[in-house]
Length: 502
Length: 138
Image (cartoon, rainbow over all chains, first blue to last red; front, side, top):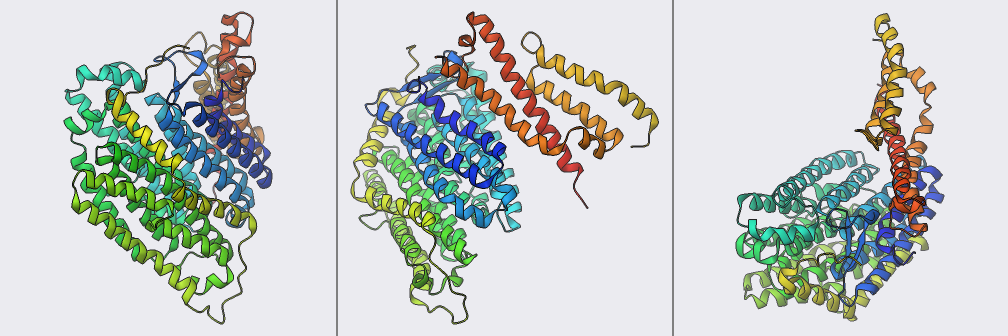
């Protein structure tokens, strides 16, 4: 019974855990429920990945309504891969949350906080697993609406304007997406992704499909913060509670990128996207500009969270370069960086959360000499930073290596220079923090600061060690990402297998 | 608006019918147009009309605010609980056919229950939003 219903349980568990947290109305009890749910979800996602590792997709028809009429949840390797990273980050962040949330959020709002986190988790997992274009919109709204509320819970009053800004931009993105889906529905009469893909070929030359493609990609580009549609991101990340920042930075934009990959390769098809629409002509320059501008702007930030947020804009640029390379290696690099960037930004933002707990600020200048007081937190930050730069033996190196390979394959020398140059800029902004924390003296009148509690350090170090592990043992990430990319390119433009009734 | 006698009398006459109509839309939703969402909104609109004509304080005495959030959560749990029940009975999530011996009855019970969940949640959330705006100081 449980084994058959795993794809549904993956989304249903957090969706039901959320109202339970609200009913319990106690911060600690809600945290226990949320953490339990998050770890169960992680176990489910591992089980799903295990089941589809051979390449066969799992289908789950909701309410036993067969697709294309009913909602079909599809777990193929691509979905399982993204589910794993979202669930893993969710589990780690939730375990970390208790102390950080207790310090940053009023007691009365803590149950609401965990309710929203679980809703957001359910939405992100649902986007990844669903095979229905409209269902994806619903889940996108579930995750987005809860995200807006989560961002607004930040202590700084500017969190409210940041959340509002994100609300407006995010709603425009979601609206564009649903307009595109509406146009596709008008032409094909179906909302099931695989079904749309199979009916798209005869009408692929029409302006309606071109318009639908434009709306869907721009809508999703807003959600994944593609330069120059990233304007909501720095403020949202900077003012949200630390736990929320870590969770969003590691999952939300990744899931939007996944949705874009899904639409490009499983619905529209790579041939349509690149040979007919020439999306790469738009994506590549913007991705390159994002990687450069994001990195440069990050150097000049005074706040730690805002610096890392601009760095995220740059990292999204890398993923889009991989996507725009239009090759198996390029897509492999994009998928790898999707996974590895979640690990490094997760680790970095969790370390920042520990600093916030003890210092109450994220200003870089306030961190002088802090490495003596908080050696473990700062060590975690340093290793996360090395991974962000792409130093060998960290996860960041692996994805950048594949990205450079992909770019070289196409003979795009300027982009190689760009990737190396922006990595060097990353050295600059990571070093700024290290210099202040390790090489400056702590002011004599500064209050003493203790190391962060174990409940924060353990999850942070779990992600830090994952950064090192996946930098050395690349079987899971590179192997799987490569197979997924080959899948998407082969087998008739990588269409989802149309459901065969079990 | 609170002192308008005509409005108060008419509202007093109308509110019971609005609430009754909400229940009609709720429980007739499986055969006719309607369902939980519309019913929840109509029900909440009845209470909101009461609050607008008789004041927010009496409305909040009628529907205590601290009950609303738990009610909203309960509605979602009822919806999801039906899904879990169908899984326990060996079906897919929200496959109502397994809820009764006759699949047709099962579908019937299932849709009534989940729409009840939707109705409770929508009504509670509508009132929560209304009270949140009305009770803001300053």
